[in-house]
Image 1 (cartoon, rainbow, N blue to C red):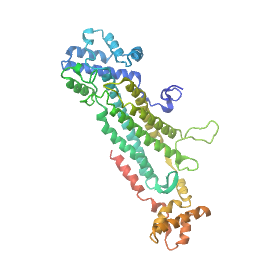
Image 2 (image 1 turned 90 degrees about the horizontal axis):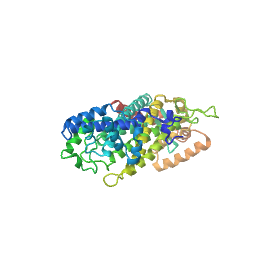
Image 3 (image 1 turned 90 degrees about the vertical axis):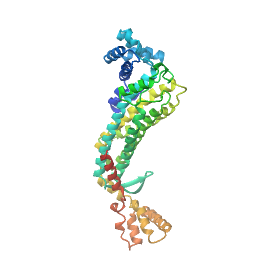
Image 4 (image 1 turned 135 degrees about the vertical axis):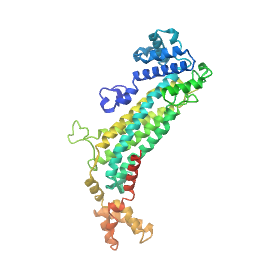
Length: 442
C-alpha cells in the first residue's frame, strides 16, 4: 500500500477524486506560485514600485514558463520551502537579469505559497459548492416523492414512533444546507491575499505596501487582507472544520443507508454493492462504507488542523508543514464523499412494503406513545404510562399486537384512529416539504 491510499494505483478508483487531486498536484502548486509571482510583478510595475518594463517582462516571461516540480526538490529539501529554488529557476529561464532582479520584490516565501494555496482553495470551494447543491437537489427530489411514506422511527437503535421516509431524508440534507451557507460566509475570510514580507510588517515593500497588497488581491480576484495572516491560520482551520462537518453529514447518510439496507431490515435498496470472495449472497454497501471511513479520516485530520493554529512568533515552519499533511487530505475526503453520495442517493430506493411490514411487525409497539396519550385523557398520565408499560410487556410475552390488547381493555375507544401510521406521522411530511422548499429556493 502507498503512504496515502488516495494516490494508490490499487485504491485510486475507490478513494481518489480527480478534480480535487489535480488541484493538490505538485504541478498545480508550482503553477499557482508562478501565477502569484507574475501578478505581483505586474502590479508593482504598474504602481512604479519596480520599473514598469521589468514588471511587464516578468509577467510575460512567467506566463509561458514551464517549471518541472522535480527540479525544485533538492532546493526544497534544503530551504524547507520551494520558493528559493523556484526563483532561481525562473531567473535562469528568463535570462534577463536586468528584469528578473525585481522578481519577488518585497515578498516572502510564505506570501507566495499561501496566496497560491488560496487560488487553489477557491476552486475547491467551487467544487464543494456545486456538488453539495447537486446532492441537495437529489435529496429534495427523493424527499418530495416520499414525504408521507411511513416507516418505523428508531432512537438509540430501538424502534420508536412512526415517521416518514421524507422526514428521514430531510434530516440527512438539513445539515448540508447549513454548511452551504457557512461556505458562502467563509469565502471572504479564507480567500484572501498574503503580502506581508519577512516578518509581516511589509517594510521591504515600501511606503505604499497596502496599495500593492490591494492591487495584488484585485489582480488575482481574491480579497484584500489588511492584517498579515502568516501566523493567523483561523480561516484555514475553519475551512477544514467545515469540510469535516460536510463529511459528517454524508457519513450519517451512509450509516443510515447501511442500517436500512441490512437483510433483516430491508427497507432501503442500494445500488448493487461489492461481492464477497466466499459468500455469493453478499452485496456489501461499499459506497456507504467509504462515506463513513472518509469522515473518520477527516475528523482525525481536522484535529491536526486545530493543532496547526499554534503558529509561534511571526512565522512558524514546523506547524505550517502540519497543514501540508492535513488540509489536502481533508479536501480530498470531502470531494470524494460528495461524489459517492450523489451516486448513492440517485440510485437509492425505499421498499415501501417492507417499511410497512416492519412497522406493523413490531407488535404495534411503535404506537405505544400515542396510546398512552389517549389513555391519559381517561386517567392520570402516570397511571396511563404504568398501565401501558405493563400492556407492552404482555404484548411481547403473548405475541399479540399492542393495539389489540388495548382494545380489549378499553373497548369504548376507536383505537384504529390512533394506532395507524397516518395518524401518527405528526409533522414529518411537513418537515420533508420544508426541506424541499428550502433546497428549491437555493
